[in-house]
Image 1 (cartoon, rainbow, N blue to C red):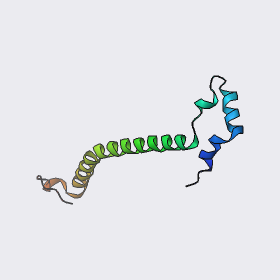
Image 2: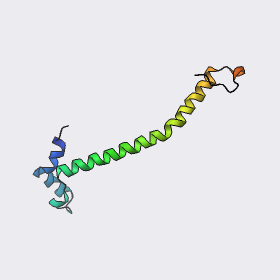
Image 3: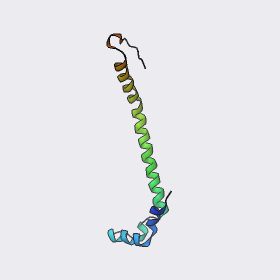
Length: 86
Protein backbone atom coordinates (compact mmCIF):
# COMPACT_ATOMS: atom_id res chain seq x y z
CA UNK A 1 0.00 0.00 0.00
CA UNK A 2 1.21 3.49 -0.78
CA UNK A 3 2.16 5.22 2.46
CA UNK A 4 2.95 8.57 0.82
CA UNK A 5 -0.39 10.15 1.74
CA UNK A 6 0.01 9.16 5.38
CA UNK A 7 3.62 10.32 5.53
CA UNK A 8 2.54 13.76 4.35
CA UNK A 9 1.16 14.40 7.84
CA UNK A 10 4.69 14.33 9.27
CA UNK A 11 6.09 16.86 6.79
CA UNK A 12 6.75 20.28 8.30
CA UNK A 13 5.11 22.34 5.51
CA UNK A 14 1.88 20.35 5.92
CA UNK A 15 1.95 20.79 9.69
CA UNK A 16 2.46 24.53 9.21
CA UNK A 17 -0.51 24.62 6.88
CA UNK A 18 -2.68 22.85 9.46
CA UNK A 19 -1.67 25.22 12.24
CA UNK A 20 -2.26 28.19 9.91
CA UNK A 21 -5.75 26.96 9.00
CA UNK A 22 -6.58 26.11 12.62
CA UNK A 23 -4.72 28.59 14.85
CA UNK A 24 -6.12 26.93 17.98
CA UNK A 25 -4.15 23.71 17.51
CA UNK A 26 -0.53 23.08 18.34
CA UNK A 27 2.05 20.66 16.95
CA UNK A 28 1.23 18.08 19.63
CA UNK A 29 -2.44 18.06 18.53
CA UNK A 30 -1.52 16.77 15.06
CA UNK A 31 -1.22 12.96 15.13
CA UNK A 32 1.78 11.05 13.83
CA UNK A 33 1.28 9.37 10.44
CA UNK A 34 1.17 5.89 12.04
CA UNK A 35 -1.54 6.95 14.49
CA UNK A 36 -3.55 8.57 11.71
CA UNK A 37 -3.23 5.50 9.49
CA UNK A 38 -4.28 3.15 12.29
CA UNK A 39 -7.32 5.31 13.12
CA UNK A 40 -8.45 5.48 9.49
CA UNK A 41 -8.17 1.71 9.05
CA UNK A 42 -9.98 1.10 12.34
CA UNK A 43 -12.90 3.30 11.29
CA UNK A 44 -12.99 1.71 7.82
CA UNK A 45 -13.22 -1.74 9.42
CA UNK A 46 -16.08 -0.56 11.64
CA UNK A 47 -17.98 0.75 8.60
CA UNK A 48 -17.31 -2.51 6.74
CA UNK A 49 -18.74 -4.52 9.65
CA UNK A 50 -21.83 -2.29 9.86
CA UNK A 51 -22.46 -2.71 6.14
CA UNK A 52 -22.11 -6.48 6.46
CA UNK A 53 -24.73 -6.41 9.23
CA UNK A 54 -27.08 -4.27 7.14
CA UNK A 55 -26.86 -6.58 4.14
CA UNK A 56 -27.13 -9.68 6.33
CA UNK A 57 -30.43 -8.42 7.75
CA UNK A 58 -31.84 -7.63 4.31
CA UNK A 59 -30.59 -10.76 2.59
CA UNK A 60 -33.37 -13.11 3.74
CA UNK A 61 -36.36 -10.84 2.97
CA UNK A 62 -34.88 -10.07 -0.44
CA UNK A 63 -34.54 -13.78 -1.15
CA UNK A 64 -38.18 -14.38 -0.22
CA UNK A 65 -39.27 -11.49 -2.43
CA UNK A 66 -37.36 -12.93 -5.39
CA UNK A 67 -38.88 -16.37 -4.80
CA UNK A 68 -42.39 -14.86 -4.63
CA UNK A 69 -41.85 -12.93 -7.86
CA UNK A 70 -40.55 -16.06 -9.58
CA UNK A 71 -43.54 -18.04 -8.30
CA UNK A 72 -46.01 -15.48 -9.60
CA UNK A 73 -44.23 -15.24 -12.93
CA UNK A 74 -43.50 -18.92 -13.59
CA UNK A 75 -46.61 -20.67 -12.25
CA UNK A 76 -49.73 -19.98 -14.33
CA UNK A 77 -52.75 -18.54 -12.56
CA UNK A 78 -55.03 -21.63 -12.48
CA UNK A 79 -52.35 -24.00 -11.21
CA UNK A 80 -51.25 -21.86 -8.22
CA UNK A 81 -52.16 -24.16 -5.39
CA UNK A 82 -49.39 -23.47 -2.94
CA UNK A 83 -46.59 -25.07 -4.94
CA UNK A 84 -43.29 -23.31 -5.35
CA UNK A 85 -41.53 -23.90 -8.64
CA UNK A 86 -37.95 -22.78 -8.99
